[in-house]
Length: 316
Ligand SMILES: [Zn+2]
Image 1 (tube, rainbow, N blue to C red):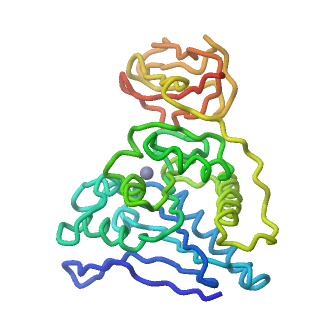
Image 2 (tube, rainbow, N blue to C red; image 1 turned 90 degrees about the vertical axis):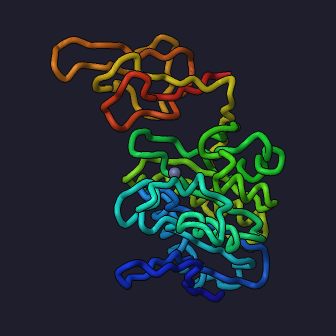
């Protein structure tokens, strides 16, 4: 097994610094290549910790079963280094969402150039997993999001990822200009994972996804079939347009939940209240529209009328 760190993109900064996007490459015996990408949004850190845990596991593998890495594993922990450095979701100083910039442009401005370099670097991969950590407002249970267009080829890969939910949809993180959509459109299978919350780490989710990734890589022939791996324990529930309910704030105030994330909820059960910071009354009660499970829960208390507070997946 061979290991090295290399730069896939660099750009001179105005005051002589040099900005770099780097990857760690663990090369085995010529089998398929797979990659984990994270840090596209500079306020999301769960994927960076996942890359660390994969790297630590690969160090263990190199010491104990070096012949068991059949393919190549590449880690891209921070595609948006300036955003990560400055706690900005978008790419400074442009204010551009890097995940709305793909497939990019080699002669464009910096975010377009990063996107273009990432697309070139990831070409030919048997699987790319793009790890997101929601945002600073919402906490998400580990889930894979798949666009309807690519469901047939991606669902079999997602099912072994040890996530709690597979969400089939056509919106937001699986939009056309995202890295995952652009890769899939170029026949590079790419899954979007959302888990945890922005600016935080959730180590139990990391371990859960690590087990899923290792098993999926074994299924693809990147890891030897006889290598013993942490078990896949989750059977993902399938979310789609007809069973996901959005709970938006009826009024502005402080959202105070009285439920825990990933809890079973009953129709009309009280999930929380919106209260006024100025006065003693409750402004609105938040109740579940259906029997189901709470798979998104607001982490950041301040809400404006229309803010998303929770998503409930109805039981079949
Ligand atoms: Zn993100």
